[in-house]
Length: 116
Image (cartoon, rainbow, N blue to C red; front, side, top):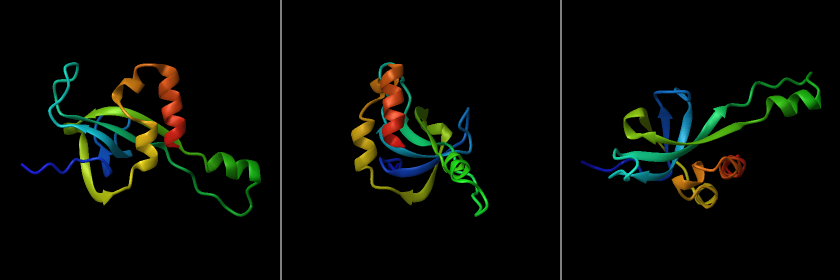
């Protein structure tokens, strides 16, 4: 079977808290790991998208509505639907290198900030 879930592939998450949200595969684990013995991927995505902005809004309101909230998560392949789109990942890969970053809350927050 062809391996099409590679780093940089844009996917849609199908299950869980982030169902329906778009994400990008940062690193894939086709064979699994000892703690997760199933194929999975480390993804970075958008939890809250920017809202519509109109000309009559104040600068403060425009800034608040333009904010993006990212997420970084490990997701089973069964819960990912690939799209035909891909991205270049140099910026994201340097920020989120491995799934060990997700263990420590302060490292997770730093990774989210870098992904933003």
